Amino acid sequence: MSLMKAAMMLGVALLVCGGSMQCMMQHVPIAQSSPAVPMNSPSPLSSDNATQHYAVICACSRYQNPNYNIPKFSPAPESKLRVVYDALVLTTSWEADHIILLLNQNATKQNILSALDVMSSRVGPDDVFLFTWNGHGSRIADSDGDEAERDPDDLYDEVICPYDTEKSNDTLTNSITDDELGYYFSRIHAKGRCLIFESCLSGGLVDQQTSEQQKEATAFRTAFLQDITAYDTMDVEGNNTIVMMSTLPTTLGRATYTTHSPLLYAVAHTITHSKRYDKNDDGLLSVEEVFRKSRQLTFVQSSLMWMLIWVGEYLVYKHNLYMLFSFLPKLVQNYRFLDKLVPMPLLLATVLLIMVYGGVQAIMKMMNGHYVLNWPNMQDDFPGELPLIQL
Image (cartoon, rainbow, N blue to C red; front, side, top):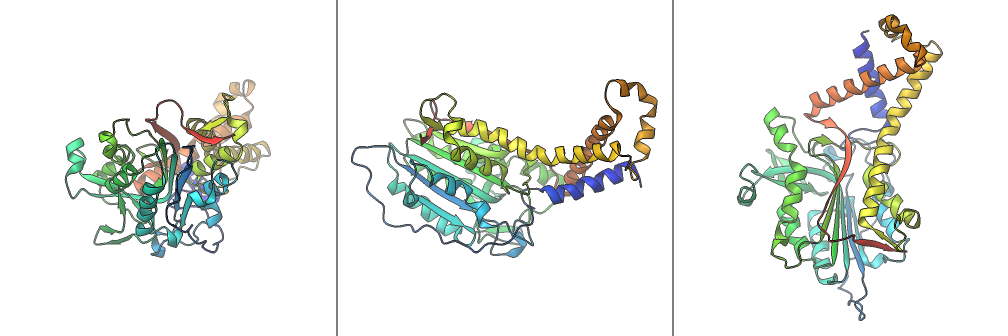
C-alpha cells in the first residue's frame, strides 16, 4: 500500500468519524420535531421606547425529500439546531415570545417568509433583530436581470433551501432567493440587524457538473452579501446590518461530530457566557464581540480532529506500531540529524499529518470542486458596535 493511498484512507476515515462537510454532517440520533413558535398578532412596542430584541431562527437537517437530509441517512437532532434559541432565552435581553423558531418541517418557505413578515410589524426603530439560517444553500439562474445591473458577471440568484425545497430538471422550487430575503429584511426597520448563515453550497441539491459551474458556485457568499443588503441603499440611515458567514467564498463548511454547526454553536456558547466575553466591560455583549470569540471557537472545533489525528500518529510512531507506514521512517532516515532538534516520532507524525490533510483536501476537491475549510467572516455595516445582550 502506497504512503499517499494509506494517508488518504486514514484521513477520509477520520474525517467521517470526526465530522464531515456541512452538507454531510455527523451521524446522530433523530429527535422528535418541535413545534414552531406561534406567530401571533404583533405585540405593541414598549411605551418607553426601550430596545426590544426579536429573532427568527431557522434550521433544517431533515428535509421533505430525504435525499437532501443533512446527513442523508441520519439527520442531525433538533437539539443541535436550536442552540442559539436556547442560549438567547436564558438571557435577560431576549424573551421567548419575541423569537420565532422554525426547525425542519416547520422551516418551509412560506413559514420563513411569514415569520419575516410578522417581524416587519413587530420590530421598531429602537429594536434589534437577529436572523439565523442553518441548512442547504445553492444558486439559481437570475430570472429578472437585477444581478447583472450590480455586477455584469453575476448571472445567478443565491438561495437558501427550506424544508420543502425540491429539485426537478435542474430547477429548484420553494427556495428563497437573496432578492426575496433582501426585500423582507428591508421591511424590518430595526436599529440594527444581525444575519447569520451557516450553510453548505454543495450537498444533495447541487450537481457536480462542469468545472465552470463549480467556479460559478464559489461566488455564493460574495454575491449573497451584496444582494441581501441591496434593498437598503434607499434607507437614509444606511442598512445597519451585520452579516456572518461560516466559510470563505471558495470553500465548503465541515461540521464537527459533537457540535454539528461550528459557527452557530460558538455563537450560542459566547451568548451563554456573556459576562466572560464582554471584553470592554461596558455591560453589553455586542455582535462584534460575539463574532470575535465565535471565530476563535470555530477554528478550535475544526482543528480538534486534526490534533487528535496528529496525537494518534505520534503514539503509533513512538511505540513502533507503524506497519502501514513503515517506509516513512526510511524516507527520512537520511535526515537523522533532525532527531537532535525534534524527536523523530514528532517529525514523522507531523509529516504524515500534512500528507493526510493534503490527501483529504485533494479528494474533496475532486468530489465537490471545492476545498473544505471553516473560516467565519463578517461584513459589518453597523456604526460602532451592535449591542446583543444586556448584562
